[in-house]
Image (cartoon, rainbow, N blue to C red; front, side, top):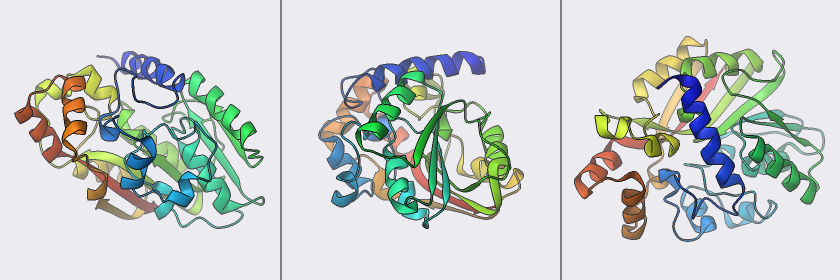
Length: 272
């Protein structure tokens, strides 16, 4: 399938998600969030605190992440932060609290419905230091050398070309700038049935690449001090969550176990 066709499928799915209060009940869903139970409870298991969950406007946490990139970003007052695939603005709002009124947060998303929802949330929460821009993360609507820190949460795996994403990230960062990303990657071969499963692609599974290939994409863009760390806490383990994911992705128990063993959540840090 061509890259543009994949983008349209992803855009259509996340447009539907944007119209709901959470990912639960939408199809297809993001497997990493498992989409059952409390969105806040799942976010806590991924590394978000009760305090963080209470700092954002209602409706901004859609349960679509696979970690907490803000927790590893070491943001400072006055920083300019860029969120790749901002969704309804959840991580942007957390970052905005860190950088303060002297800082700035830019969220980029390719889904118009998500941008609309994020802007509504920003207005509702009175976040004057956050803005949202429509665009693809392979072609960022951001000027060269203007960003201190780039964050992203389980989105780059949706991009057909991760190398292009990393080149764009490098372009917009200031010298000395850094990336703090949470994403899914592979530590083994993904079965063909899953790789060709569109529901799995939209769920951020089929689009994931091998950790070593991901590292090459980051390094080839020019980044240094590249670190990958597996985030074991972000994996799904509840039986009901597993059952829901298997039904969504149309996998039997053995196939789902293979998927769970191969796909992992990772934190990625690197510097320009």
